[in-house]
Image (tube, rainbow, N blue to C red):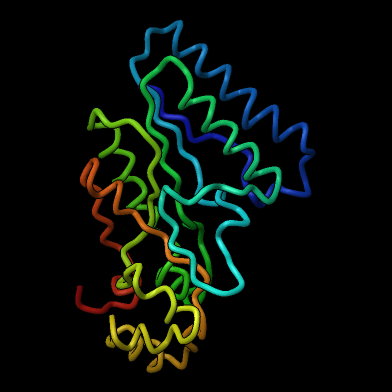
Length: 217
């Protein structure tokens, strides 16, 4: 099985040329796929990013529920080339699975906690998702995000008063924020949904904001 995670990433935007992004993220993906075919590799797993949704991730008048039905609208060369690489993988001759990984890089604790509320994932959960997807004969494209307490029906209220929704869905988390003197977000712009991954290959993220804050899970 080919597991492909190498790429130029969002922090490289502005410091690397668009041509280099295309050469690395698209050109080398094509080369790897060709090599995999020559080596009789049976399947490909590509690590992508929820960043490919781009401009579709935010809306002026409502919270966006980010599942795989959301149409990507790339906003920069990173999004553009990751999405193009996805298409190479999914339209090629190898059976393939694409994992769109939510935000998972190191951040200050308070920032990390806020993002884990609705749009981030712990890197250990990412590793679990990769192993599960590799072990199951699954194909398709799947979001990989952390656990959160929200439901799609919460989106109107999350846009108006996210703290009130959190008080209803996870009051202990709101209390933990207040005990630390951290401000809860007034508004949540998006919620990342991994339901398809859960249903297709058993992905169950365990390391969310409650685990980060040492709360009972």
